[in-house]
Length: 213
Image 1 (cartoon, rainbow, N blue to C red):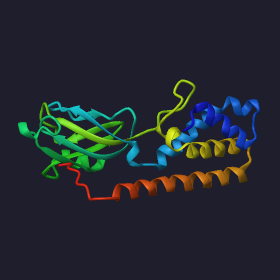
Image 2: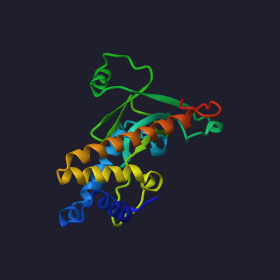
Image 3: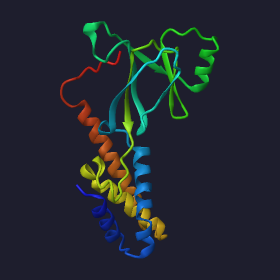
Image 4: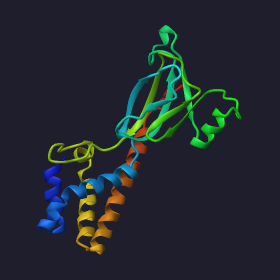
């Protein structure tokens, strides 16, 4: 594992750049590398489960602040996994905002619960009964590395991906485009290896059943 300062020092050493312009922009390079990781990677280590209480008549619910894509969403009529007290689960189906408008206009008769994502919020139709639970499994964005937040799961488990991304950004910044392309390819290969490893680990061993509704 590597922390913020170790990654920054290693990236400067690989790129052989210790000038003030690179030093002044090192945080920008972290942001750029993290943005690329967030766009490309969607693996199980990034997934997180959260719950939101339903309110009768409420159409919009806030997305988690670190939301980076939906894996699954369901509505529980009571508390999650509280089958003993009669709580049941209803799978919520994604539709586009245009389809949502059509459903709300009454042109399509709804048969189950639907949702879409609008302006950083979950829009539901029909509105949900009171005192239930919206259960969300979503992908999380990386916690941004800085002098105050020195590590995250990526820097701990896969510092080579971070390092390749930082070096690529430094080489692009100093207009060494051939080297930047090589490190870009290196980062792409590493992320593909991680994605493949994640898929193989999910399918290894006995088959598991995940109940979503």
